[in-house]
Length: 95
Ligand SMILES: [Zn+2]
Image 1 (tube, protein in one colour):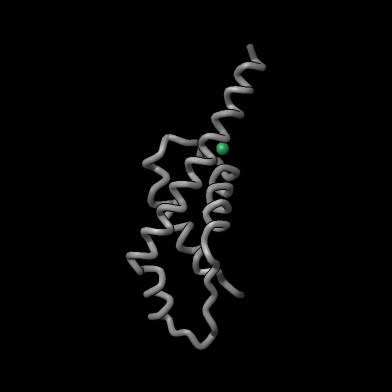
Image 2 (cartoon, rainbow, N blue to C red; image 1 turned 120 degrees about the vertical axis):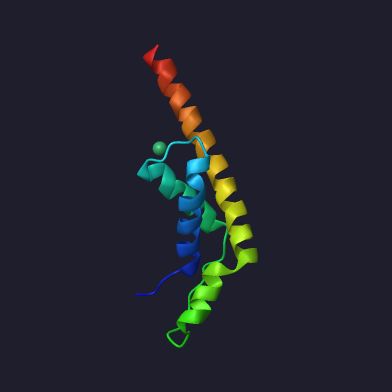
């Protein structure tokens, strides 16, 4: 199976930071955060000849983690605004 290593990094980053945000963490919202962040980051695929230490180095690169974190934070902002709007619409309907 071909794996996008950027996707692994984004998932790990979301897991790390999501608890610091007061937002909905249902599957839809988490998938939206992941999709938005991944749309803003280049996909990364390794060839079969790549050894594990290179893959590990990719996932642990500090500079890369910082730029992924920035995109994840942006995506969280976008999704939290969206669900907030939907939430207030629902509230208005119920009144
Ligand atoms: Zn949600």
